Length: 294
Length: 294
Image (cartoon, rainbow over all chains, first blue to last red; front, side, top):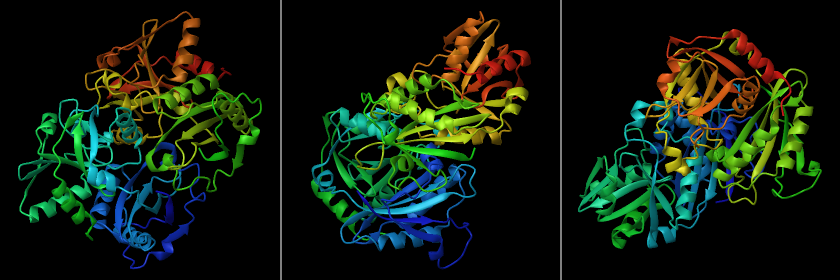
C-alpha cells in the first residue's frame, strides 16, 4: 500500500459554506517530509481517521465515513470537520486513483502542540490484493478486549466509539493473532460478548437473519456493515443489532469480517473450530461491495 | 513547550558497539516538516516514547528511561533500541538545553508502512513553569480505566505496561478532569484499585511509609517514582509496592503525582475531598528531584 498521493488540508470551520475549497489544499509528495516532529498525531496518537475504499476511481460511502469522522471528532473534543471541504478533498484524491482498488485515508490530528489549529490531510494508495481473503477466507482467534460491555457508557473518556489514531492495541492484537497462526482477531468483552475485529466489523448469519454486535459506543459503527445491511435488507433478509454472546460464534451458519478495503472476508475458523462458509453468498456480497456505492 | 531542537536517528542494531553514533544523527529544524504522512506513529500511534526531565543541561535518570524504552519495545514487538546510541542522542539534545528546566523526548516509531526500519528521533523543549503545581498542589478526580487489575496479565496485547504513542485516552482523561474542575486524574480499575495518572505515577504517604501501586504490567513503572523511592529509603522511610484499594486515597496522610517534568505535585483534593498537604516534605522532595540524578 505505498502512498501515491497526499494532500495537506487547512481545516475550514464546519459552517464555512464555500463551494470551492481548493485554496485550502496543498498537494505534497507522500514520500517527502510533510509533518513536523511536534505533531500530536505522532507524539500521542491524538487525532482521528477514516479509511475509504475506492473502486475504479469511485470513493465508496463517503457520506457514511464523513458522518463517522464527525462523530469521532465530537467524542475527542476536536473541531467539527467541514464535510464539504473533506468531500472535495476525497474527490481530489479519488481522481488520482486509477482503475482497480485503492484506499483513501482521512486524518484529522489535534495539530502541533500549542499550535493554532488541527492538522489535516488525505492520502491515497493502491490497495493490497485481497482476493485470497475474500475467496478462501480467514482464520480468526478471539481476544479479550479487557472491558465489560457497559464500559463505554460508564467511561466515555475511554473513547471506545471513536476511530482515533491510537491504534497500537489494534495492531498488537493483529500480531497476537498471527502468532497464534490466525489471520485476524475478534475482540470479546470480559463479560462474554463479541465486539469487533481490530480493523473490521463482524457479521454472523443465523438462518436468514444477519446479526452484528450492537454499537452501544463500545465499537465503531462499521460503514461497510451498514451498507451491507441495507443491501441484505433490500434482498429480503432480516438484519439485526444485538448483544452477541461469544457462544454465538460457534453456532453461526456463517460469519464474515467486513471492512472498507478488504470488504467481506468469510471466516473459516474461530479459535480453531471450523465455521461453515457460504461461498456463493460471499461472492455476491463482495460483488455488491465492489459496485459503486454512495 | 515549543521545541527548540530535533534530531532524527537512524536506529542502530541493539548490539552495535560503536563508540560514536554521530553519523546516525541528523539535526532537523523542529518547526519544519521532518516526517512523511506514511509514518505509522502518526497513522496509528504505533510506537513508543519517553520524556526525560532536564535541569540546567543535565538529563535526569537516563538509564531508567532507556530501560523502560527497551521494555516498551519488547512489549510492542519493536526492535530493541541501542542504549548507547540513544544515550548519545540524549547527550546531544541536553547540550542544546540552557539553564533552567527542559524536557527531552525520545520517540521510536514502527516507521513508514512497509518501510525497512523504524523511525526514531529525539526532541528538546523548554519545560513549562511547574512552580504552581509543585507548591500550591493539584486537585484530582478518579476516573475508571475500564479494566480489572488482572487485565494486563490476562491480555498482554492491551499493552498496558508499555509507554506507547497511543495516548488519546490519556489526553481524553485529562480533558475530562478539566471539565470537572480538576487539574489531573487518577485512573482506577473496575474492581476498585488505584493505578496511575494519565501522565504521572501516584505516591501515597501512610505514616512513615510511602506506597505506590504495584506495577504488575498494568501501569508504567515511573522513573521519577523509582528515583524518589530510592531517596526516601535512604532517608529512612519505608517504601512499598502494593495493590492499593481506591478507599486508601481518602485515608492517606499525603499524596503526590510524580512525573519526569512536573516532578512532585502534592494532591490537595481527590474527588473534592481534601487531602492533607505536607508542604515542607514536598519542597524537600522537589529539591531532590531537581538535583542532578543518574
